[in-house]
Length: 247
Image 1 (cartoon, one colour):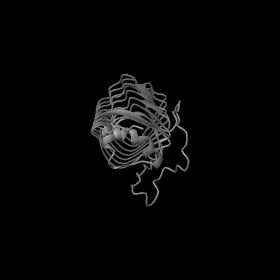
Image 2: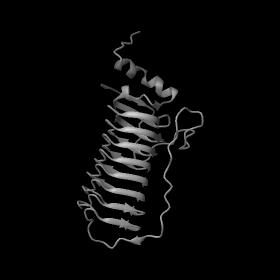
Image 3: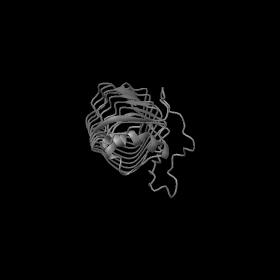
Image 4: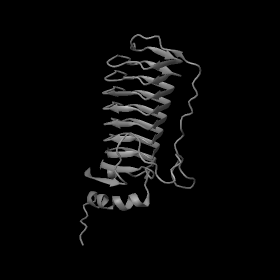
């Protein structure tokens, strides 16, 4: 069902959202929502990546990729375990079906990165600058995305469990048909989010700095919002139910 978007909070510009009062990153006890389990990544001593292009179905273990230009390369089906990617370019990098485990991605940037049907587990993504990243059909478990900005994030039909978005800006994120369980949005900006056909369980939206929902407000069962957000949402709920509100 398409509805007009709802906006809660002030619109923020730049890579970091403002910090909401009282935000701790952990859902409060007795709040009626289970908090997400965050990743605890402790990398071993890493070897520098020796250069060369990514290989399909490659196996990368205990490596540091720093300032690497991986744009346009094909690493589909590869496995990254105990790796650090820092200040790497991922423009149109093909990483379909990739597995990223116990790894930290810092200051990655790129447009059109293809991570469709990838598996990310125990991963920290810090200060990304991405546009049009494809994560449809992906599985994310114990993933932290902190800071930065992601435009047009495609998570359609993805499965998210124990995922935290913190202090980041998400422009038109698409959660259509996705399953979200124990997902938190902390001090972050969501602009024109699409939850159409999504399934939400223990999703905490209360501490989003800005919340705009373009589609799928009827799919918010299983989410927790604040009283202020409920007031802002009232006209949207009324519209979705076909109720006219007149003075």
